[in-house]
Image (cartoon, rainbow, N blue to C red; front, side):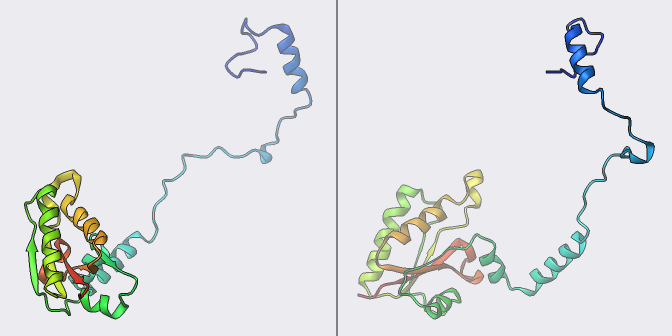
Length: 187
C-alpha cells in the first residue's frame, strides 16, 4: 500500500514500490483547466437567516401569555392524575377552581423530615374528607446544581399514595411551580 507520507526519494520506498505506483498511475491524464474544480476560499459560516424574526415573534408570543401559562409550559410545572380523573376536573384544579381546605409548607425541611410529615398530612386530610389541599415544596432555588430536591421528591411521593388522585402546580398567586394543588380521594 502506498503511504502518502513517503516520497519517491524516500529510502524506505524501494524500486518495486516505485514501479507499482507508476503502473497504477500510467493511464492518468492531467485535467484540462476548464474541468478542474476551482479552489474554494473558506466556506462562509452558517447563519440563521430568520433568527431575529424568530426571536421577535417568540417575545411577542411570550408577552401575550399570562405568567401561569408560561410557567406551566416551561417544564418546571408538576402535573399528575389517575386514569379516572377527567380533563375538566384537572383543568378546574389547575385553575385553582377547588377550595383549598388545608395546607402544609415543607420549605427548609430535609427529605427525612418532609416525607413523614407530608404522608401524615395527606392521610389526615383524606380521613377528614378534605377534597383539595395545597402542598408548598419550594422551587429548589437554594439547592444549587442539585436542582429542586424536595420538589422532585414530593412529585414522586404523591404519585405513590393511593388517596392522591391528582395534583398540579398552583397558579402564580398560590406559589406557582413552588407548590401543588392536591386532589384527594373521598372516603
